[in-house]
Amino acid sequence: MCGGLNCFDSHRCTPLPVADNGLSPLAVGGLFRWADVPVMRQRRWMATFLPLVQVVTYSVAIRLLEDEIGYTGLKWALETPLVLAACTVICLGVGLSLPVVLRRPSDAALWIFASFLVTPQIALLACNANYRIETGWPGLIVALTGFLGVRTVIAWANTPPAIRDLPEASRRAQNVALALALLAIVLTLATYGFRGLNLGLDDIYERRLAIRSVTSLLPGSDHVILWGLYLGVAGLLVGVIATRRWWLLAPALALPVLMFSVNGARSILFLPVLAAGIVVSVPKRRRPSVYPLFGLFLTAVLLLPVLLKLTWPESIWVQQLTRRLGLVPAQVTQLYVEFADSRGFVGYGHLLPQWLTGSADRLNLPRALGEFIGAPENHVSANPWAEGYVAASWAGVFVASLVIGLALSLADRLGAAHDRSMAVTLVGIPSFSWVNASLVDGFVSYGVALALILLWVTGQHHRAKAAVGSTVSSTPLTGGKRRSHGLSAL
Image (cartoon, rainbow, N blue to C red):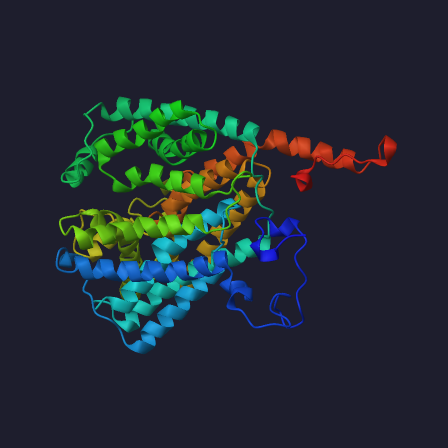
């Protein structure tokens, strides 16, 4: 017997009986208690209200940044009470749809999409004077429809959670991650040379312009470098935190620092932090936490720079973290909506290779968006749902949600026979690329497709053992006992 919703693995336990009115026996025959309502139980209400905390955090960041970097279109002003009430209801609805603990790879992706795409969009609509209601709502609906569409597909798939501890599969994945990271370091040094370690933020745009003229060492080497960053670093940090292989920390940190010194992409330095947050948030057998640790971690990443700015006005971390992680992708989503409304929908021809279309003047959508805002030297990339809206209106948003939802459902199914920390981290980190990258780039360049292959290959041995165990368990043995080694026994 367990405590139902208060139990860590309630799907495997027998819940307490529930009365006809939906309340637990603790509330029947006595005084009504809010703690007996499922949404008010400790872990669920925390997850429900965290998106609202994130929206407030983004709103304060807009207020702090409007004078400092007003050229970015941030100008603080509250909307009408009716709009604020609607935004509050949307926040609570998003919170109710989020998982509390990370038990599947898709759980981490859902928190990432909600924290860096949906909640900043709500904040911009609620308190940014440069957002008009008639143009602000479509941007929010694009992000919200994309998130809820992915959530619906995942819920429909209804896959079991990954195994909490499976050292064999985790060790194999760590070895592959180490090979990817080392190969990425070699290719980075061979392509760009060693230019010294530069962690400064003042010359990041100069560094980006400097490497545009550098050609790839080998066909596909740029993809391998990104795979090392998004998959290699993720797998190595699982080895560092979950299995205490501390020497893996050296390549796990060397590759992001080296690449940031080359191209100045700030999100690269955030990858190890995000990976560590995922690994720590995944419940272990010896630490079955029921709190929304990953949601708290993402909220802290957004909130701490704001608190630091309030106490230390010279701090730059609100601009570098809170704004860059959430407000910029939300503004780009709105920009794509305005582009589609003014120029029309462009279809999916720009995603096809040139040899297939036979057209040399194929549309470069990020470059077209740069020209749209009067900055042709900038390539403005957006998330798959904004790209889908520009391609085929709302049908494109639904297509992107369906594809991503099916991919994450497949990751859940493959991860069900894998070590939980490794499965969640290997898929969660590449999924973060969809905050700023297109659908195809997320699959190919940033490693979502490769993560699925790695889960299948490194967990194949355990799936074979589970299949054999399921067959043996169906055959009675001497003494009237049955053997059960399948996934249900784990």
